[in-house]
Length: 314
Image (cartoon, rainbow, N blue to C red; front, side, top):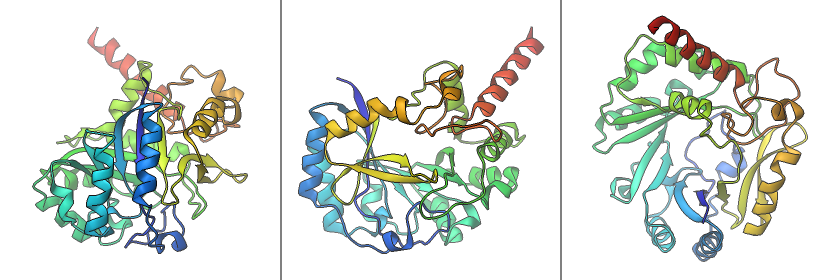
């Protein structure tokens, strides 16, 4: 049976109001939660078609969930999945459940670009459990000094890995960050002379892509929304990202099968990285002036970098 990652969004409610968030202020203030009976039904439906390989919990802010709901949600998940449950959190609200063996923590930390950055940094410094850090390459973050950022994160012994996540224009905000800006930012992290005391996930993904081991399509990742629907990431007529909700897993299969038809341009089809690039989901590419969301420029740069190193060694 094919494997799939499931990202569960139990609630959009969040205690932060980050200006780069993909959710609108109205959504961030909405305390509606998924009905756990629906969550049970949706997970069961997935397991009829796929083996659940990984589960993320995110929002909204998972730390804001009430204790009874949090543990009820865990019990539902355990009926269909026995592995580690990854919690994506802003780490400002230290929920007791975060530190139990069932869970792994991925902390969204964007330095001063995110609210309560000092408090979150102190929580990471004091953390007695290993954590991953996710940094969104927003307009404010990409202009920061990379060496200083690495040094700050090195000081947190709990941090096992760091990943730079690409910013995408969305229905809540449209920042002026190009795909090329993201590539330049990631290159700075790779080229930094400051030794990293953590795994840099982006570099690992680049190597996977160049080796043809990375899946660029959305046929192995599905979302569950607070509205008790399946979800996928789509783009509206203005090329802004949003959650497209689906009623059944069969609808998801149909959508995923059609992704190469609707979201892939001839530029992508003719690309040497087609199907294995770094995109999280295909976006229709009309030109490569500012690269693309498969980050072809970054892949070309790293491939040339490897070739240069090989020539030097030989």
